[in-house]
Image 1 (spheres, rainbow, N blue to C red):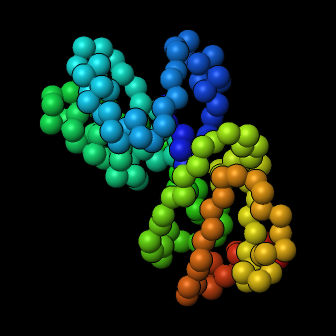
Image 2 (tube, one colour):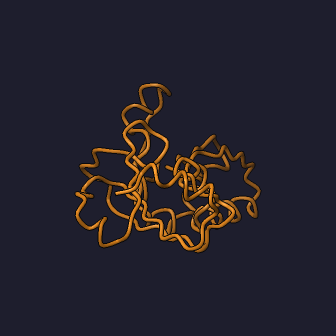
Length: 160
């Protein structure tokens, strides 16, 4: 399981419902030791659990390509991510530009990204948002440009 950009469901919970042992690995493992995963996947079923959309990051695409090139049969089950949950803000995904993930070691994380009941959406000018306590992680900061009037009307529900 990797969880270097999001928290999603806890490892303990996943182990309880699957009845399987789950190992957490840092990003460096998936980027530098992919051959270990692929070698194991040639002889038995291996699952890579990714918090968020599994193919949005180049790390995972590279691993998928490398496994495919080495004859490993692959099945992808897509998860939820900021790319699918963004509609909750009222913004249209069609208008999004560049996206960057800011990774962190997910220790002591108390709340979750869009798509859960615990989500918090705030909208406003940066100077106004600075007064809000944003200590909960993970966070998503969206800097918007031109918006459609439907997006603007919906965003005003979250105005600071």
